Length: 272
Image 1 (spheres, rainbow, N blue to C red):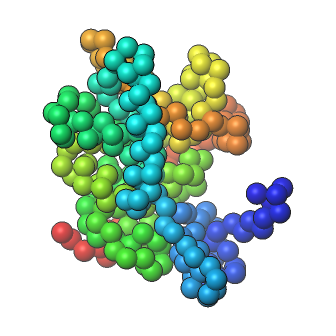
Image 2 (tube, one colour):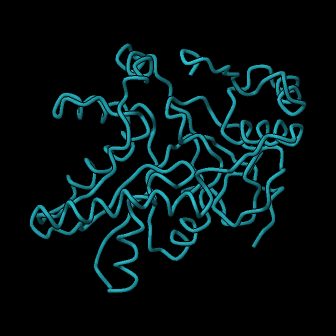
């Protein structure tokens, strides 16, 4: 972005009141999507010409992304009317996975098609697997409207894992509803095993996957190993890892750390 003339300011920053408060309380805070959203909203509220639209957790974003799933359905038909038995994708806020899965969720709900849906998240930020289903803010400062979702709490200090797109405290309300209704299930992995899956995929397929996408690959490997019958698994290889080579370097050098919260304080959230 800076190559093309943009000014890029890492969050938490010293240019917003909320960013400064985070740095003052926690100078080593690694930042998070929730903090960045709070800073962006504060900046927009101080500029009459600026506008801000929340991304991954809102319904319109998930619906825009379904072009991916619609194209996947068409491609499967062109390959010989194949249909997935299992649809897998990584989850941070939810738009990545929902974009692939929702057209197939529609078929399951309307036409009772037998499909398994698996959303994969990091153990370092386990909102679907260890969070609670309640109302929470979409940002760390608590500025946004409340959203009904699985969350580890907007005050959760997200560890500095390399899968930056998955470092978010909650998930899209529509996806969380599907998880709550047991239409979608969730898995969580450590980043070392995720990078190992990415390394294996690179060796076999010639593509270095993004750490986010490697979460889905890890789940595909595990599920494929457990299958006794031949099944069709559809997953979202949503990004390459050419911008994440530092993470792969740390993994290959044995320097990569796993993070998993022992205790997640959810006492300040409403109980539903």
